[in-house]
Length: 515
Image (cartoon, rainbow, N blue to C red):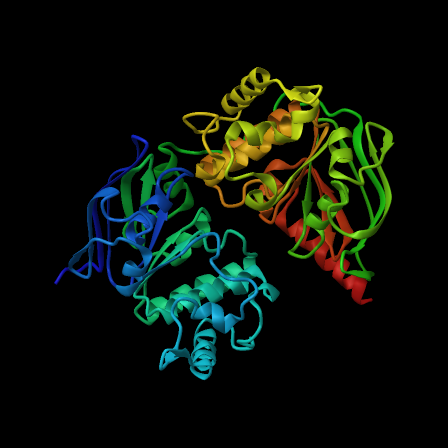
């Protein structure tokens, strides 16, 4: 009997003649947590899709050896029958079904060919207790829960399938710090119970904490495997393996930037909840951003940062919106998205797949979409030559890794999708650009490239506003930061911005509210 629960030997997977995986090898012991790291597009998710049967036997070469047996999975059902369960980054829950129905969807508890609802609810409750959701009613619709709880329900669903090997693809990408910590602790609990886990994540501090070994993939090749207690597990060491070089400064210096006049100003901005006209979400917000300045919006989850951005961009969030917005000294109305774009305001949303991209269409189509009417058409007819020329120019400018601008954007890695969203709004030639979680779910190399784009925007005299839940990102990229708390400006920081300073503003504002 092998000492390994899983071996993947010499795996090769091609897409249209291009090798996404080229002689990839990994081994994992029972009860171990292995992290798989690599830049966006390195082949991490492709490898796990091979393992789980998403890409069936025959579409790849190489061997999958699971519990000493060579396996040839033709679909996910076959891999799940062996105890291999994958939880994808995009959760596979049905929003209008209950928690219990979701946990046993496709794995129903039946008696005489009919669903046994008593057993379904009883077993669902036991699984919820196991993942720490002891207070949840199993009859609650899944869409009434936050993303963090939905992620735990996905794990409960996997446990209901008697998983021995659990694969989690970017499980904490959309979670706040508290939810992420809860998930990582659950992984350690499952490990203590004998579960084997594979985690794909770009959050290096998390995988350093939870993983026993780290396999690094670069450009479709396995580079090395690091073992806790034996090898250097530091973030800098992992990054070196991922990008092939030392990354001495994760935040590039902003040089050659001259700050100009105030380009963007907000006065006494108030917003009420879209479903409750009596609940005020944002109260008397006042901010200023100068030309060439990068300003952060920091705060805890629920502070109102995204709500502020969306309310500014065509009143996409809220009701009873009041206050004044000035761009280049002129008071502007931006009650629709079209008006916002016409007034040179752009917004890169935190959810690129839902609000930023048309995933089934090409890179070129997505890049030119928002600028089509003003820059690429005449009398309603699109100038395709000009559209192609600009899309190709921006593909090179921000280094989108693709074979062609006609490639479907949904086939790109997360980091390259984010670059396409940035290009889309850059092509509208905005004076004010709001970036909401611009590097969520992407690797350190792609992050660095996006930070370079931000610096170039500042150098071009744009006003850039960054919303980020990662305080080091706010500190490393912003000249000034407004701290939001409970829908109000809790403080403003400039010069040397620190995490302690941000949290100090929040705590002081809380004390003020209590008083």
